[in-house]
Length: 276
Image (cartoon, rainbow, N blue to C red; front, side, top):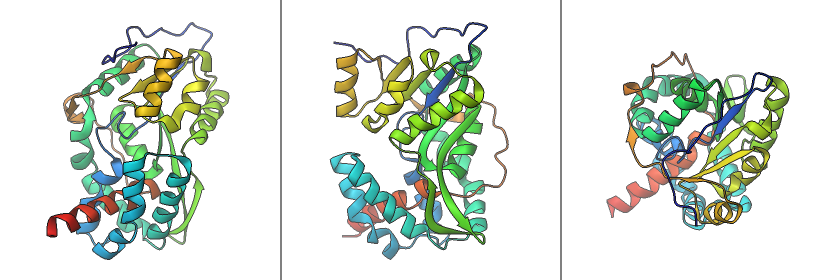
């Protein structure tokens, strides 16, 4: 039985004829929590989320958290998130994210993830973050990490506001689709590429690369990794990103669908419990 480790035993450098990418999930792979939960407090403070709106989708989030991320439950949560975000002013959310990004995300980054990203960059690999969180959050986080690019959920914007519709949901099989599209665009040899994730919903992504890795895996992914002989990594040390990786300006960003309502839901539920 494979024992978890903090890093791959070896990262192969690409040959001169190949381009190689390392694909990373974000939540619970690079950071030690949910990026949605991380932004719940500033959103509540600025009035975009209120107690009633948070509790409205509490049941869906609770079921999702306790019972696992199967496709049906995740789709239900996505629908709740989309409905809650509809009508939000993008400029207002942009300011909230710009002002709080480093404070809420920096302390959550796993040291092991930061070190692994640095190793891949040193070996000439492109680093790509793939996340179901909104692209307006994922992109600046990816920049802070020194990643080359990112692909995330895209929320539809109409007249400066979120419409409640989702243009692209970067979840499950769609992550594998994104990896394949990036391979065509940038010339990656997927057989030489790497992928890291904690979730069994990302098995399609792991299956398309030559070097899949399970990071702090859920029960289903752990079982799959053991059956297939995929390395299992244990990331345990959150640290401040500022202490290790130079920060590049993220510019003015907006908060997409994945990093809003789900975290606010959990936050609202916990506040309700504490107030009893």
